[in-house]
Length: 169
Image 1 (cartoon, rainbow, N blue to C red):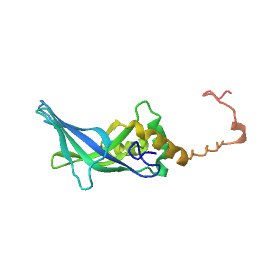
Image 2 (cartoon, rainbow, N blue to C red):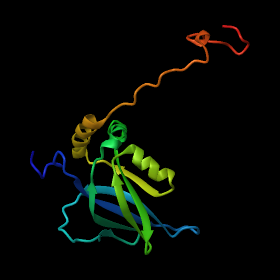
Image 3 (cartoon, rainbow, N blue to C red):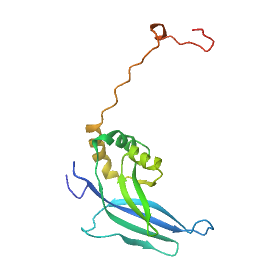
Image 4 (cartoon, helix red, strand yellow):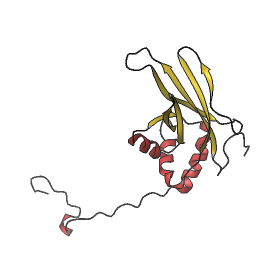
């Protein structure tokens, strides 16, 4: 496989996150930050964030240096994500010195949901299509469905018998 065409089979995939600030004309907030996208990170080692678009209304900043590494215990979350109508890269970000700074990235639906449940700032951006086969192959190799739980009945009389509220069967 050509290294420039997509990620290696087992190697992490380098990403850069694009964060966008929109100025608002609103009495409660002067600006809104959001994750706008991810791109393959081709920044030389040691390169920092940089403004890539700026005008009077909007600023976009590119934050390089993120490694997308797949974890075997997140395989089910990867499957849910890549089989959804709009697969995403989830970006968790925090404010630092009045700039929304990305902290982590994942393609696990479950991990993204856990971040949201813990009230982190999380944005979902379009998953680059060249990552889907890599994620799918990894998830298929590591996904282990839960064993079906054995049904327990209060007594042998309850097996397979539906009862109604009035006590009739």
